[in-house]
Image 1: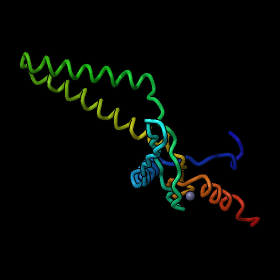
Image 2: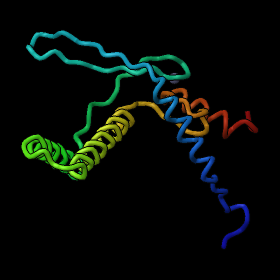
Image 3: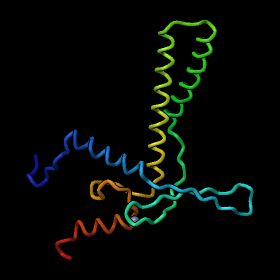
Image 4: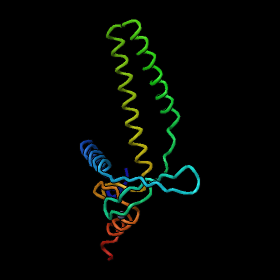
Amino acid sequence: MNAANNVVELPSLEEIEQMDKQQQNALESLEISITTITDNDDNDEKTSYVKCQRCGRRIAMFRKSPRSYSVSKRITVLEKQIKQDEIKNSHYHNNNSDYNYIMESKQELADLLKEEDKNDLVTRLPLFSSRMTGYKWICSKCWDKSYRSLHHHQTN
Ligand SMILES: [Zn+2]
């Protein structure tokens, strides 16, 4: 292995879990507002803004990105399957194992959609979050400021 000063100390599982939790909490407390800009054509543009959790500046969020092919395919399959199973179930009064199967599919679909919502929000955020920011979601200006103070505190 390399010299000791090249060794990066990896966080423990509990630390990672803790980080995830803090980041998730900060994510849930984000303040998002939607502004409708009325212009001359018929389709009014909607822009979402999110507040920096440090300076409070409102920043326009990125546009929604399309779902990945594999995820959207799985969602379609699940939705179709649930519908068919439910119809089948109500027609033939099937047993409990079929019912459990439907519930499992529904649970998987709900989890997928929830995960997608979270991913969608994160990819649309014009903000950054890390241990350096105390897991708060902050704008690029605030990010630069904390980065500079973190790395140049000896020379300043
Ligand atoms: Zn800021």
